[in-house]
Image (cartoon, rainbow, N blue to C red; front, side, top):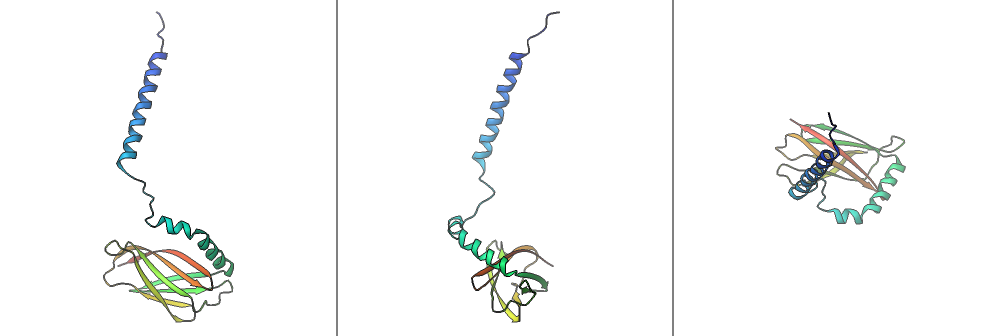
Length: 150
C-alpha cells in the first residue's frame, strides 16, 4: 500500500488556523477597547514623579493607617514608625463609583490626636471601593479600602 504524503494537508491546516486566529483577534480588537482605562491619564502622568516623592516621604516616615467602619462612620488611625499619632494631616476619603457611578470625595476630620473621622453618605449599601489619602509636610499616604456596608 502506498504511503500518503501528509505535508500538503498539514500546510492547509496551518494556513486555515492562521486565518481563523487572525480573524478572531481582528474581531476582538474591533469590538471592544481595553478594560484598563484612566479618564485622567494625562494629569496622572504629569504628577507621576511628584507622587513617587510623596510616597517615598511617607514610607520614610513609616506612616501606618488602620481603618475601622462603624455604622456610617469611618475612623482612620494614622501613626508613624514609632507608633506616635500623626496630627494635623489633611485627610480625604474618595468613594470610587458612588451610588450613581460618580466619584465622591469626603474630607476626614481629626477628632483626636491621629484619629480621623469621616461620615459616609446616607443610603449606601453593599461593597464599595474607597481610597484614603493623607498629606502632611510634603508626604502622602494613599491606601485602598473595600467598604462592606449592610
